[in-house]
Image 1 (cartoon, rainbow, N blue to C red):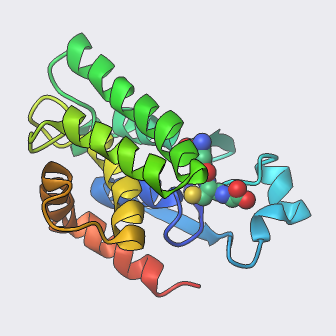
Image 2 (image 1 turned 180 degrees about the vertical axis):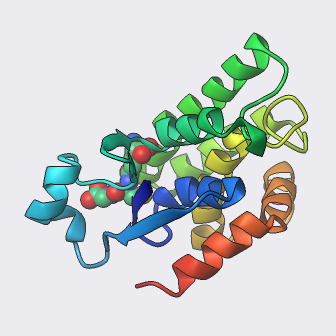
Length: 189
Ligand SMILES: N[C@@H](CCC(=O)N[C@@H](CS)C(=O)NCC(=O)O)C(=O)O
């Protein structure tokens, strides 16, 4: 059984989207960041870092968005979430996910200007392509989307400021798995 510990609108949204893309049964357990539940003794036993997501695969625990996405993409290849092509595309997906995980959240903590700057870097990396890697949807797009979704809904950048990322955002928002995730998470508090 797959069990996702999540909080609405958090990083766990990426893992939640991937689970809906795959379409396997899973259960969710709410860890409300708004109520500080990530600091509860019960949750700290599950994830001593006090962060979401945590994904259980039966009794085995996985933390870090990138690792959960990687696991799901490789474990369920029929969903086509792992880049096709070969070593170059796989390395490119890891490059995107490392960039997203290591650069975007710290930039947000530094402040709005640095946060905007990092998305200018992401805009350049995307370079008007439909998808982050190899012309095909993959977990790198899910990871990118979740961070841009947070940025876009928080800062409401002017039209034309991030044209490639906005087109990517629209493509992502058209996906049923993304709509389902947002719908479910918007009804949880
Ligand atoms: N490096 C982790 C970061 C996860 C993360 O920062 N999660 C945030 C929510 S977006 C969290 O749980 N924050 C709770 C806290 O810091 O108290 C990952 O990529 O999964």
